[in-house]
Length: 261
Image 1 (cartoon, rainbow, N blue to C red):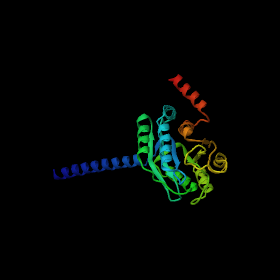
Image 2: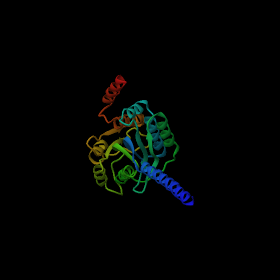
Image 3: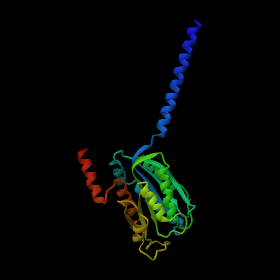
Image 4: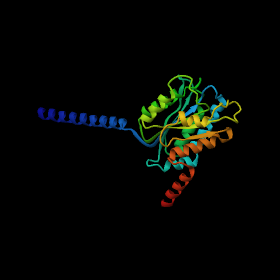
């Protein structure tokens, strides 16, 4: 009888231990499996010395309004998974690339609103003179170091200058992004109508096209003043998220999907 009890006890312990191992293995596998999304998007916003605190939060409001815009949410819903991953980073000097909002899965109104609320609540974090190469490298590191697997990966870079005053050379960062199949798009802030902005003496859009953006479908959107900033951000995000060349293509695609539904 004692022998039988010992055998039964051993079997029970073995079953419990096996169940525990299976549970641990399942949790580990779940944690190691990347989260699938249609797009990984790094919003890399200028917070260098030429951008004052008022402009920092003006930029943030533009992104907050855009990410909660009905058209942006519709563009997200058109994707294969119907969700994207977004992080907002402000950049300044070579030592100053600061994550304002960490990676967030956006799949509808609630998650978009939470992202926007967090974006507007955090104080300014980045300072210093332009280090564009280091900023792009930081954006790439965030993509490569997350636990997310996107069909497309984009660094959305904004700035009012193409000058690189320190840190990693821009071309080195560009080539690293291309090698990792990460595109770089640009938002060139011309600041011709900005009260505190200092317009550059060269063609900023052309400089962005030749020196900063990267990828077969990369593009630049320009902003020439405060009045157009929010609209430009919305348009840029719409094209990036929908993966289309222009807004008309997005409208046609959206209409076709709604007709099928």
